[in-house]
Image 1 (cartoon, rainbow, N blue to C red):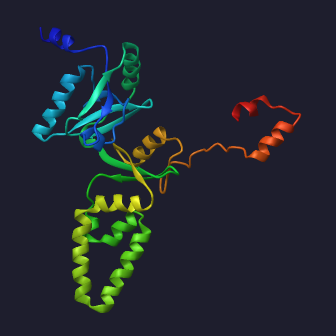
Image 2: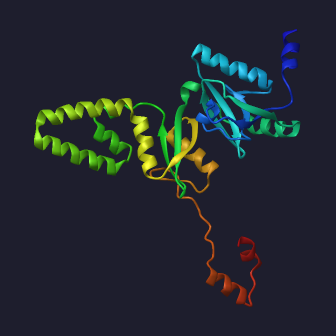
Image 3: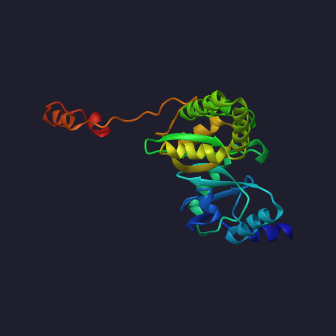
Amino acid sequence: MAEAEQKKSESSFLIKVDKIRKKSYANSIFLKPDDVIVALNNQFYIYGEKRFIEELKDLKKSNERAILTILRNDILIDIIVENSLGCGFITTDSNETEKIKNQFSEKNNYDIDELNEYVAMRDVYRRYDVYENSNSLSAGLFPPLWLAYSRKWWVLLAFSILFFMLFSVNFFLFLLGWILTSVYCYKAQLNLLFSFSMLEGKAFSLKFAAKSIDEAHNLIRNIDPKSRFMYSKLADPIIEEVPNEDTKKNEENSNIIDEKSEALV
């Protein structure tokens, strides 16, 4: 009887994000229209919109979190969620559902405790800053070390000049400034990092979960093949060179035609 009820609640389709309200939770975690809801807590989700909304509302009530797996541009992305998304949905057809199911079956799944949350910010040149969504104790104990670890060198320079001036004026003024700065850096460190990146021309791009920063970089590279990172184990992306006008004219005037070259252009 229980199996019959479960089969009845299942369907042959997945749900897909349609419209996102500006002040919704979906907007705060950077979901986009056409993102497909693939799984919840590593379980392939074919139970429909109504049950999905109820389960996410229960997360909020019980103060729990869950792993939401979405499909964007044929890339599976894990996101940690704790509330109902607050957006409209449409459904996939049976063929699309089956294709996504096969893709999901090859994915490596992890428990929520094994994953870290990351926030990615990027500029128009595809340069990314990727931050772990957690507080670092070093930000409170020794702000200069935290700034160096975060590679915010210009901020570190300004910080050093300021505290050198305070130390030159009065040691106790320096000590008070250090304590206040340490407390502030610890409490607001993520907002500070986001602000530093915004000053460098970067904007929020993606919020997701991964096992490590290396996996985080790899996921972003899969989503955006032209992505660049200041420090990463990944090689620089391969960018195809676009021929300039002189090169195009030379190719047009040439009597030798290379079909392979034309295809690349």
